[in-house]
Amino acid sequence: MIVNISDKDFDQLIKTGRNGKYKKYSKDKRFMEGLARMYKIMQTVASAEGLKVYSFLHYETSMTFTSRPRV
Image 1 (tube, helix red, strand yellow):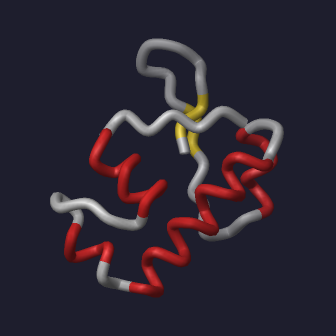
Image 2 (cartoon, rainbow, N blue to C red):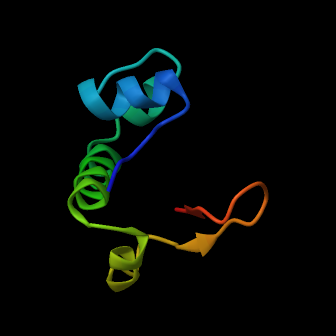
């Protein structure tokens, strides 16, 4: 699945593990490990339907502008 992160600071945190805006979170090792795990899972599944087997990833369908699902 293609994962687009709209917040550039958060995207930097995911990819590098560091960001000034999210400094508090970047120091939390457990949070960063979970974030990396979640990001890898989202990249490996074929579609949002594949996320249903992971209890820690909440899935809901967004009907705001399109029928594209949000995670």
